[in-house]
Length: 568
Image: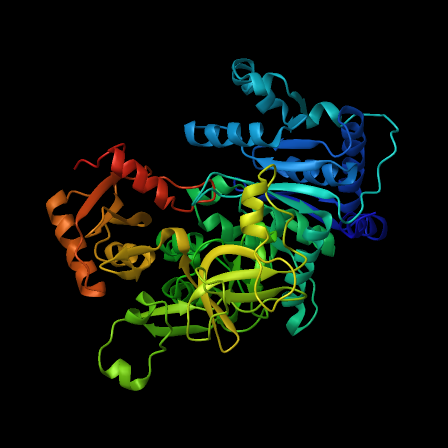
């Protein structure tokens, strides 16, 4: 029996009456809960049904709207020795395309879903041959299963999950993760959690469960450690961000996670009278990851919600990626976030020059970076020159390479991509290394991530990261939507800087005025000329299912002229 499944079975046996999972209903503010005993019985029944309907090691697509059914189906797959493939109901052309790509790539035997989705998907299943050949079953139809099939004792090295990447810089690829990978990642997170002392926890999660952050923080880590977890709908959070904090208030939640944009959204959308009703004094870990952590967001969130009892040390910057299950680095929980201000010009040369009193007095342009901490457990990290594949010095920016028990086996049915990404070798170091594609540096034991290799802009022979360009423009006028822009370079000799940027629906400014404001902001902050500003209507910028900007797709759409222009 894998350590992962055994941990859940131990909690089912020893604390059957304790809460395992809950679902927080936004209207009214009530919770539906399952005890460990109830959850365990439902998992066993569904696991036996999966054994009866699929072959050992079969891939099973999990296709659910937000709810407790996903968690039940996921753990049933692990208990039955089947491979879970989380995905999302195809509600629009973008999610439909992603679903079809995953369904084709995974070659699943079965789609496990709900009766409602089963009914809604009849037409698309009939039209698509790959879906027509696949078996589809609903959880509701299997809850009364009475078979007595023996359940396998899956070993630690057996495949547990195909976690498809977000697709921010490439086509989504299925990362092969074993039971041991998931367990090791939970133990790494737990080591950071208990660094300042063991305590009881209550997890609260709105992040979609098909996303690696939502999956681990919502239904894997809590149940492996034996703590309660309360879930709420991502849609309910996006509609009214205060609901996330209301759920934390109602449940007295201690741990919750979200990307940087989620904290920024709370700052923009939660009103003072709503904040006045919140008690966040019990919130101990607010994990911020999955995209670049912004220092202004950390500071403003701490200051804004301090009257609600939020402590500065609650904010927890972190770094991770699907290829390493999810979590890679973070500091000990309960410590203050660490920041470092460096000269912007040095970053353009892939060097690190921290600001001193003298350089600040000289008025040098700077960029403040947030540390994402250190690795835990048996994980190892190196910063490597991506061209020479030699180790970088402390003052040099390079590619982040990883080793450790959380690293997946590779990409499903992509041997060439697997060899290129998971089998890098470093002179003087044993074994294979994972090339993350992320740039960063380690300064005084702290990891700082500066950007993605594939998204780096080269202008006039200098390296520029897209985020500072996008942020400069978005800070120049409230009509530029925050987190909804993409900077990239086009052409050669010379390269030209282009920015595509969403505009608020309520904006009444002319494109010429907005273009001038964008040009002035970029010139003042970075000294760069903006060649073209493409204005987009709100909600049209290409993003991944987890909310990451797809800059390469934006660039391709711009070059082909395939984007919807904003009109006053």
